[in-house]
Image (cartoon, rainbow, N blue to C red):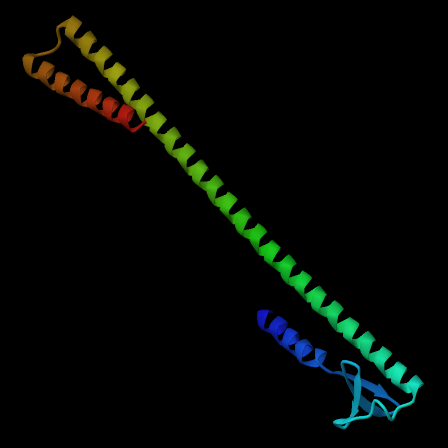
Length: 162
């Protein structure tokens, strides 16, 4: 697409210097206010009507070329704006995805914290119950205290990560 536009611009630029006008089966070339036929200046040899008709036709062609160039510039501008808008949209989507991931991460950490807290409470209740009933040997009590300490560490770790 880019090459096509460049090629069109080049073609129009080259032809804008000299307009080719066909009249009565002859191809006249108009440069500024001079009319050439086969490379020779024939401006003075043409009558006034022919001269005006050829110059008018050349002006019309020149105007069409200018309008086409303007349309091409506008198309380029619109294409650029569309790319810019697409880029901005992608950036916004990326930011939204990042925010969603962060939210999920925080929710996961919150769940871990709540689970660790729940496990610690359950463990403490069970330990207290067994201790009250006198079902803990000194070895079992030591194991339970280690277990409760590990649960407390997990809770602290989850709290720090939040």
